Picture 1 (cartoon, rainbow, N blue to C red):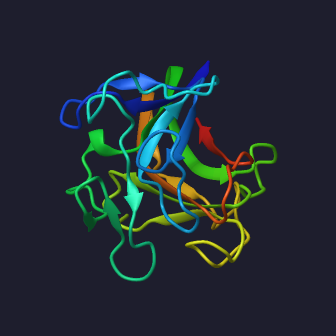
Picture 2 (cartoon, rainbow, N blue to C red):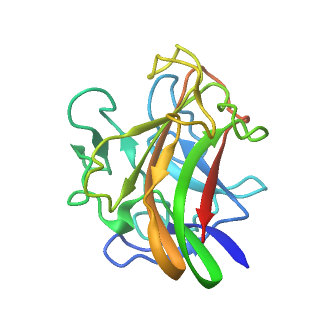
Length: 215
């Protein structure tokens, strides 16, 4: 039997505690939960959003409670950069600790299996091959030595911070490839994700998905 868990670090970066949020959502906001993200700007905070909806990160403040925010800075040519809260740094394993990523994907199987052809993608929440509506999004996987670049996983229209358009969904060239892993009961992928509204207003046709083969 195979089970997926979507987890976030609910502790400090140096000593992560991976908390399951599979029944909740990942919300991108301005400075605080509920704050608007200005169109064509990347989010300033990331939160576990419950069905209520409310901030499910916890009642405290600071690094030890909330989802870690990985704000894209440079996503174009040259070195990709990310702001973890103290200014832009190069998007590398050396700068982004495992406990600093947006989320950890945890795949468990009752027997030892290997994985291949894994993908993390952004879609409209209904059809897995259709891009999310009115959203730009990028993603990056930690632990891949050759990966130091944000991958565009959604760019709905030519408006917004990304201007190519018609990118997103579980389609070749429009998703983040997850590194293959050898046989084990548990598999983990550590991802940074950043999102931006192309226009004003809440974006509800917006979700993330995972697809993988195991053997």
